[in-house]
Image (tube, rainbow, N blue to C red):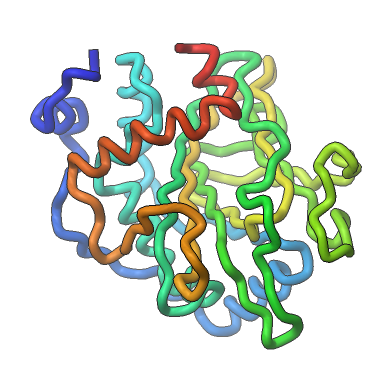
Amino acid sequence: MHDTFTLKDWKALAPDLTIGEPMNVKEIPFPDAALAEISEKFWTDGYLALPPLFDAQEIEPVLETVYTLGRHGIPPVFIYLYDQPWWMFARLGRLIRHFLGENYAILPNLWAWHLSREGDAGWPPHRDCDAKTVFGTGDDRILMSLSLWLPLTDVDENNGCMYILPHGREETEDELTEIGKLNLLEATALPARAGCLLGWRQDVVHWGGRFGEAAKNPRVSLSFEFQNRAFAPLAEPLIDMSALPPFADRLALIQEQFAKYRHIDPVYSSRK
């Protein structure tokens, strides 16, 4: 049914959200001391896990729209037709620039999850990039790309939290080790409250857990990927955060994600 939706239809579906409005958001003011602390963890283990950065006022309209999409049988990734998810990640600009430099872009790789039935699961163990994404050592290190994952509900081991294999436990070689040869039992579970932020260098192995019988609430989450423009594009077209795609381009971008991720998203595959 949604294949025939017009811009007017999408707006009517989520009257509390907007499409194509000018962006006017304030970046979250990460102090230098906080960035230094985040960096130490990130460069050691390959990931970050931050306490809630977004309050209920920002989260609820987006979350309720994901639920509305679900009631209409529409995959949650269509949440990116609306401005507000993009704006939430735009508020993280200072953090992103800290790792990727002033000249960064959004990669055309995005997804959203809504796990609510027993047996639903996040993605299996994988890397977002199958090549090294950190170059240099010490203070000269340069990060090529970064993934950020934002839960809109509380997540834990019962409803499908993220698991990550800290970089220090994964490998020491220059070449990436095949995932099948890694000891995934050494992974770290990353339960998080709604509005927290998880992120990782894109060559780190991670995966989503399973929604089980003991789950207390759905697991709804968003992800964006970013890259340093000093490197050749990992995927095209790169997207400028200050010039977000118009409606038609967003719709085309979302439709492209299905072919890209059909092989790895068990929830989407099982419901088609």
